[in-house]
Image (cartoon, rainbow over all chains, first blue to last red; front, side):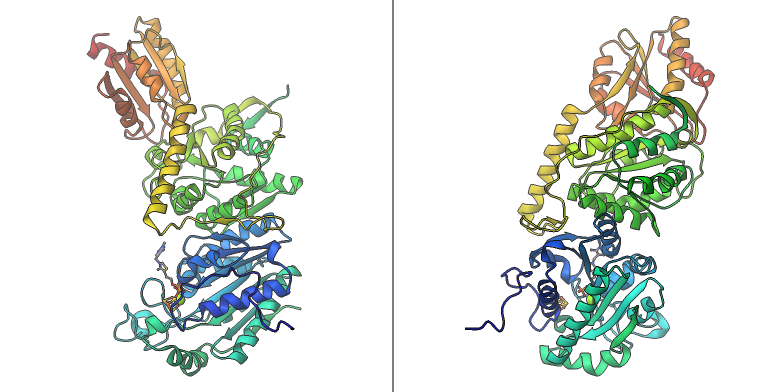
Length: 245
Length: 351
Ligand SMILES: Cc1ncc(C[n+]2csc(CCOP(=O)(O)OP(=O)(O)O)c2C)c(N)n1
Ligand code: SF4
Ligand SMILES: [Mg+2]
């Protein structure tokens, strides 16, 4: 018999704690498959965020650390500077990366830090119960924008991929989505390219992935996937924003 | 042995290099910047890493990352920057990552000034950030000790898996004295917990998250046991003429050198004075205080702040003798000023 599908070795055989319909789990799996296929598990060091991904170290079968909220890129910098041939990645939500950790991510990118960032943009603070994020869309209802996000009060959602693509130090910047199988495959391709960028020591790489939070969006899993396509992609266009040759 | 004239900050940096320090992460701030500048010049020679971070928050988290690989790494700053590092220090203490943190201290609160001060005593000795933890705090009093304590600091950090802080007044960082250069450290600790990639072993995880209440309590108990062990083994102080002393001055850092002169002056005038100089500020050398209280009627805490260490002296004394305080800030008082204070207290107390 030929094995056509199996659990990646880089993931433990363990149930995810994520809510039903949440795409955090799909993204974990894609990362693990990439690490397996590129034979990097024993060289990998991952840094978890504060956010729903905080327990990611319970799932990845490789060396892992847990960072303070927003500081993962600085920790990854410390690791990578000491172990230049290892594969070092961070896994960060939008509150973690684009709000409290804005300085750390911008400077890691500006320095051309040889790390790979997996950025989970779900336009909300999932873990703390659905507060407004820097990526929350105009009009989106959250517990701290109960009348919908109003630009005159809280400005506009930040496009991180575009922003970081302006930094010379960024070598690969891409935005993808995982709302259907075709896009899951594209995301996998992008993550592989980001890892390749790091292993070739070309500089900073980030894949921003549009992700769902059915629980705090007040939607069922199907509606949540539809929202990604209907509302998020028009504001957060998919594609590569920087590819350094 | 080679004797050279060196600036305090540079002696400390050179000591760190001789201790095998492999990386420095920091953000410039007076009066600590010479440490960063020295490291920027020297670290590349030994294949080490120097990186100027975007902030002290980033710097301490880079220390977290680099220390997690098992390397000896450090950062240095002063008051406002040390405040920003507190978040990271709390995480480092719980993750039990050995590292060296330098506070070349200046006066606060707020932006304060760049003059010498010891006003970060509470912050340093009580942990400083959130949660139940301590860092070990060493207080050098000479340029030689700036070098020696950098080496000793790394040893203690590795031995106990604890962040070690060296706290020195800005003046000590800036002044020059002749020192003996120490031999480089050649024996290092095994760090099987380090996150270096899991080749040939099970994956390592470094985390400070403990959601189940039993686990959290167990972690806190584990840290407490470690702190108790450090308290039982590592309290350090220098005692000067305390055997028969009735009036004991307590001072650390540069202030202790001024106090020593005042003790000599007081003795010349028939006052039985002595000095205890805490070398470890945490753990506080309370045993030295208790022993001196066998003859001493009063302890006078001399500090370059508005009265912080005096609380630890009172805790140590627990009513055994009186405790008084004299302090300045932004200046280190000269021996005459302290001698006058000692005479005044001796007269008041009938000593
Ligand atoms: C310094 C600090 N501030 C606030 C928090 C509380 N907190 C935990 S997770 C979180 C937001 C997480 O949102 P995001 O990064 O978008 O991740 P998600 O849960 O959506 O995946 C916040 C504010 C914290 N842990 N630390
Ligand atoms: S709260 Fe949202 S982001 Fe967090 S696990 Fe649930 S669905 Fe996913
Ligand atoms: Mg989020």
